[in-house]
Length: 400
Image (cartoon, rainbow, N blue to C red):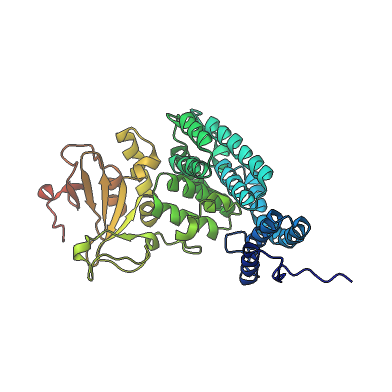
């Protein structure tokens, strides 16, 4: 009866030092999952190679047979990710998944399979560049995926780091000077879809819109707003999580939280903070100066602020999504809320009255921040005139 093969058992007088050391590693890493350098699978492959170099091919085959189920277990989730991203229509996610699979296949010496996966990723990168360069994008296309500078640069780095520099260079050349910015289009569509979904009380549609917003906002580095939208998409049970998690950036999201103020951040100068700069995780704590930016400010104050952003976009000749990025809501203890509007020339600040009446909201929407008498100044509500005026022109006490 054949005794079960033990790859850790030394054969005295036959094993070379290299083989003996490889057997020691197999023993030390036994039970370690995955295919990293310190995994059981990798140590078995190294032992098999050492045996084959010594001419002990049959024994090497036995060791490879031991490694095979470990490799299959490690590769299975990568193959699943490739299949999931392909079904989702998320081309950048699919491309990244193929690159990750190719890298893993190469690490276990499956050279032909690795080359095939890399070839598929390179072919897909050409499809990405074709779509990115289109001057317009259809809503269905944007709902499936969003490719901006963030994901394009990420793909370029991944290709280059895995020795596919020519493919990386081609992607750069093809995508330079592309037409309408996809993230901007996605943000506009996401805002409109979220509004319509809320009016129709369609939670599934709202979740999809939030996922689209999360991706678009992340591409343009609006991380606080993106994290909030990602959390909202998860909370609303939107199933296509690839739209949120394919680059591992959903770690900042807080599934279950629908409070935009939970994603505020402290912009108090470091010198004024007790104990020096804060090094802990973002979005937590109570600060002397809380700043709620962009879309979060809209969510915190309500639809009237989005109406203001729409008019602001008309004043600056830009989309509502970009205009919203100019807005910030600042909250401090024992003072009134204030909305800050950034422009290339100056920052205009509006101190919100308490109570914030319907008349004040309507007057707020009508503020023209391009007016030279208003631009760059701090405005207060003037009850007598029914408008917001700079402090020097306001008859009412600002109460600050």
